[in-house]
Length: 203
Image (cartoon, rainbow, N blue to C red; front, side, top):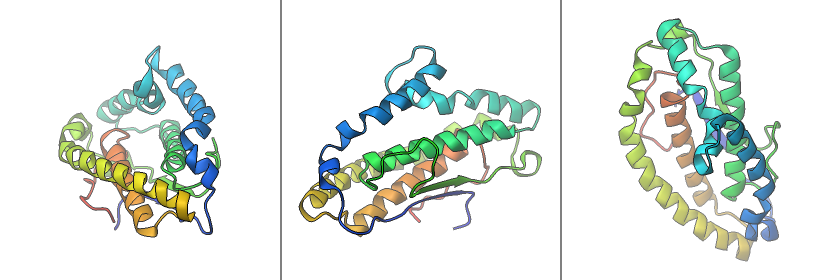
């Protein structure tokens, strides 16, 4: 499917590390502290999920204003959003048991996320960012149910890894597909890198 957001995770070969999978939430604490400090530095005292996401979302309003009034998307803002999104994707892949490598702050590892840099005057409608958040409400509703399903799949996969050392391929592909859908919606409505409406698809 031709869409300017690409996301994939390499399926791990061989047996998984059962010990780190069992204690995954505890093992992830150091990198979550790093993520929290980044979010806190951009959120002026917010906490929890708001703090963790603030590092990425703080540039939403400036980007929206630049597109509205200057029809520009500064490259460094785009690069920051892409780099931070990749960092979050590596952490998510680790927490969701898709990979055993500890999330790197800068290396791509086995988690691949890419956004195409937009030609603002050619590819983006300068007024559309005002309503994109509203247009994706159907996606958010669908993703809520898909997220619940993915949570159930991860719970089953956790046991599968503990007893067999393998994350079943079909379950793995489903979690990756739900994540891909979510990244498309995020890039469309909040990172504002494309005006192509996200498809209702797990492909």
